[in-house]
Image 1 (tube, rainbow, N blue to C red):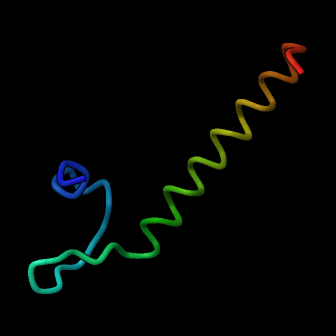
Image 2: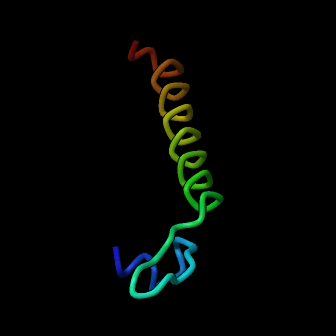
Length: 50
């Protein structure tokens, strides 16, 4: 997890010794995962792998 923060892949704000992950960062990750799943579904349907 620390690598993701260090590489700026997940946006956060420091609160004391902790980090609060920004909700907008989580939504982006979820949207990307959803699009990837949709693409895999479409590809499997195109290939007839239902």
